[in-house]
Every structure is written in C-alpha cells, then in structure tokens.
Image 1: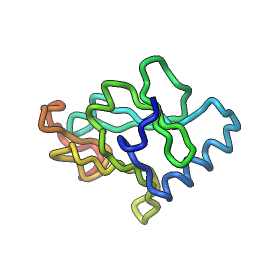
Image 2: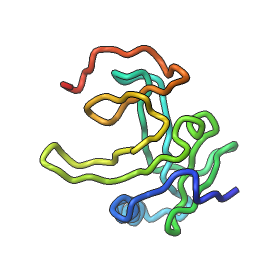
Image 3: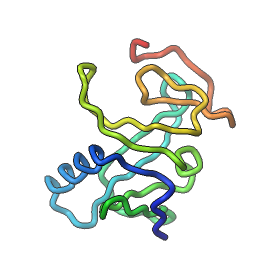
Length: 125
C-alpha cells in the first residue's frame, strides 16, 4: 500500500537519500524509518537503507521508497524528515507532531502514550 501522506521528506532529505541510494546501486533498497526504545527521552529514531520486509507500509516520496514497520508508524505518522548540515554536524532529523517532549539532540522523544521513562541525556543536552 502506497500512502504519500503519512511521512514527508524535505527536498534536502530526498536529495541526500538519493545520493546514498546511488552509492549502493541496488534498486531493491529504500529508506527504512523506525522507532526503537532507548535514548534519553524513552524512544529514539532510526534510519537505514534496507529492503522491504513483511508487514511494512511502503511510502513513495519523490520516487523513493520509504519503509515503515507497523509499530513505528503509530509513533511517527505525520512526521517530516529533513537533512540538516550545520555547525553542530550533519544528519537526518525528524519533526514529529506526536512527540510531547524531545531531547536537545533531536534523536529521542516521548509521546503522550508514555513512550518510556526519561533518562539523563547522554548527548550533552
């Protein structure tokens, strides 16, 4: 099922993902966006180049495949993925409307459903 409204990518993020996929030169690969337990706010974002897995939602973003597992989709629906290159470093960030709090590093978050206990921040924030 292709649903282009669940997660969006900025043009900068799409450009960086295209660059990474071209280096791999494997047409079966797409970007996997997922949520895992951990991080200083209880949940953390993850992204990797991967193939489709059973149960994935497949999103078409600018002609690129984005894979999201069912559990992760509930936490990140409506989010926007961006790629930022700043003095603090370069990397992907997720602007998540479901997060009620997040760490200063932008890589971990907590939702109103209680996505885990907050911990001291290991990223220096």
